[in-house]
Length: 335
Image (cartoon, rainbow, N blue to C red; front, top):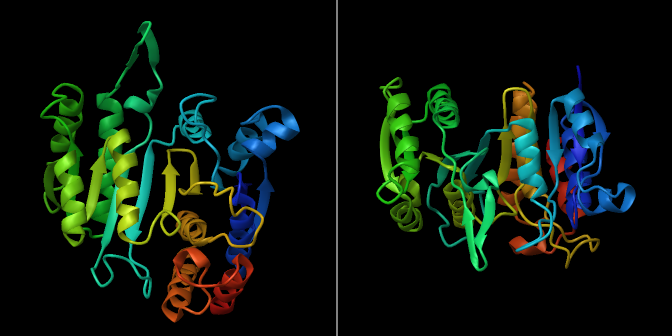
């Protein structure tokens, strides 16, 4: 079977890690036909649009995409392309596994970190509803709905049951935002009651952050509204080596988009120093999503083997290998 996959290379180091990851996927032996489309800076140069219609047309055909990092301006400029993609495709689940890679030196080396973060991906403060009330006063609206809360919570608990995870922790600030976070939490409790075999607990977000850096091994599955999920998922990535290591997936009823969650690293773009681990780990999730579980497992094992061996790692994780050398080592493991 040949799978049709939309490939969005991205900005900065995006094209380098995208090429490396495409090579790794092909080396698993899975049949793939790529639809390569541009978004971000390159797309703007070619079409005058940061997110051209060709991206959505391709994703409507393939229903699944692999995306490199895209630039988002700070305190001005266009809305995040990532947020726009999630809204247009209704990718309401942001899914991020956080696991330690063997041999990687981190502050928590030797700690058995294995957590899954489910982040609501469609509303909250990321609804983008902002306006200036009067000069010098800006209001941002935090939107929490029962519908969106229930669907991310059903997805979380269903995953936990399917994968035999033992505990789901809801993270909130309902002690202060009693209506918005309170609604999210009430929906959590309602869904948790449908899954009595799964332990359920709750943590206020500030306490959750403290517990994560003190006892990360005690967490299993975390369930969070959009903004807290964005922050906590990056914090969790820092426990296992950073954003260059962890994968990311955005899932909806009709589409799925797998991505590297790190930045575009323009300072090293084109120098052959980029680390494709995050996008390769996302590719392993993509393969599993397509039903290619054996290929997914083989790619994941290849990544772990290269890290365990430690002789073909990129500079950012303590090695001296180039992007191509790291990728060649992955492919050799797959062979």
